[in-house]
Length: 252
Length: 319
Image (cartoon, rainbow over all chains, first blue to last red):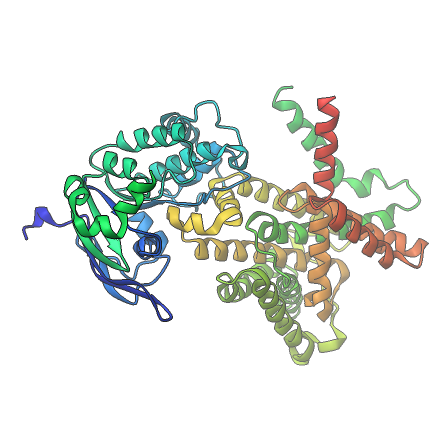
């Protein structure tokens, strides 16, 4: 492999067990820079565990994770975030009583760090926060507390928080979960319109969203990758249809 | 209203506060009032330092008196052993010893949460209390440390009661100003972020353990300064200053006044000290009154006096 082809994220033989339950049973994936990869699979396939291990919130039982060739397996979550790994949570993980603007400003401030004790937060931070809020469609909602926003708006704010991190890699954990069709369309459009330099890993149950956003799809089943290919290849894969797609498509 | 008007009000109030013993001198009870106000301000500093942990960073420490006591003993012992009354030496020693102790205790507790955090801070502070109580050669043990001298600074002698009061009042204003600028800075906002969602702060790239430890050290140093002022004021340090009673006293002040605000702990210190020092001589059941006041706030007004005031203000405005 030549240097320029070092994958943005390389996962090798990743394992994680909870007692006797094996959630990840030797997962290997390589995701190139700028790629948009969806990870699909039935409930309990290990998708969320994979994300938790990638962000460092769960230590793996075995295997390794590399970010642009650098081994990050033992780094803490905040260290990984500083290397450009950002996660949009499935359930909202916001600062509930703080305003939308303050939420984004906290994310923006992570780069400079918190040790700026005797100065007010620079105006430029708030201007940058307002700009991000406008990008995700929350113009005019800057002063509303996160807890007072609608479910869809909170998802938009979530997206603003991760974009404020200026990530290299974005982990999206069911970005459209619990959204109305209109809200789903809106957030799908927002994610689809993000810069192509950004590498995106997306876990999603809505197959329309998956096939609209992803270049490639990996199928996770019982802690293993059972198929890996372009969106159209995955649609045609017999095994994938058996374990997952057939059911999902039959429902929708 | 222009920005200058509130600033002028604050400056006038600050000037009146510092000069209280002089303009109240004609009152019959001026001396007593000065002493009570002095002790209110000492505890206001202590409660403010605890509020940085409880109200801003979301760390409900039950052992904050360890730092108050450490500062009190450090000021008293350095003054006596080094035979000095220099304020920078004794006050500096108090802040330094308390900060180092906070670094040690903080390192042990910042990764725990909930009931474990409460119990750990309580237990570690009790160890500090036990050391103060039993190391008789250094601290005077159960007899306490008596004969603590009052400090001097650049030829200014703070022995007289009114001057001692001025030293406390000026220090209080300095600490309040420091905390005011701290809590509105990116540092203070990050502490609030940790309080609201520590997991998300980590995911955003903040080393939250280190951030919480730094708050512990700042709060510890300020509590140490309050302890030193208490030692100068009383000319005495009791092991109880480092004990659970003192920790809870500050905690009650923060909760009654309003956690997560700067005005709250000051008001809380005023109310608690008023009940303990003024009301207690009028009625015999002042501790019961304090308990009832505390229960009333916990049950009816979780946001404390500042919260009640804000609610009343917004009701009045919406009318």
